[in-house]
Amino acid sequence: MKQIAIFGATGQVGLWATRKALALGLSVRVLLREPTRLPEELRSKVDVKQGDATKLEDVQATVEGVDAVLVALGTRNDISASTTMSEGMRNIITAMKSCGVDTVSVCLS
Image (cartoon, rainbow, N blue to C red; front, side, top):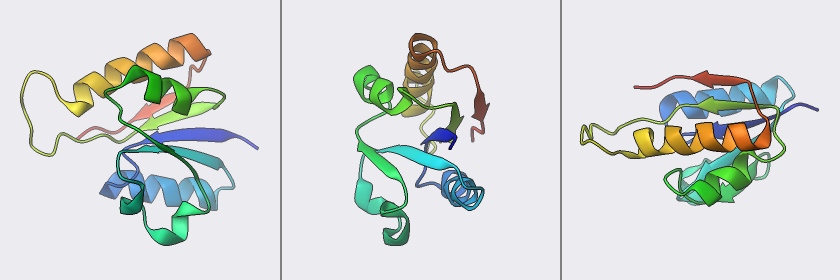
């Protein structure tokens, strides 16, 4: 079974993508700061890693062993120079390179 890592899984797009990936029969791993924000009916269906996209070690643990990555991180209207989205993307790209994952889909808002 193919496995996908989803970043931003509790936002509108990320939540839709998580449900769609499961419906397609994919194994889904998500990185969440607050696992309780993921709807309860999904928690037992996905591999939840608790952590933060701004921490490379958390992202690395999420990307390790997956076939693809989907990024749906948002800014939450934070337009400062460094955000979860900008730092997270840097860490996701770094982790993908080190883990040999070369398939990514990105939807940023």
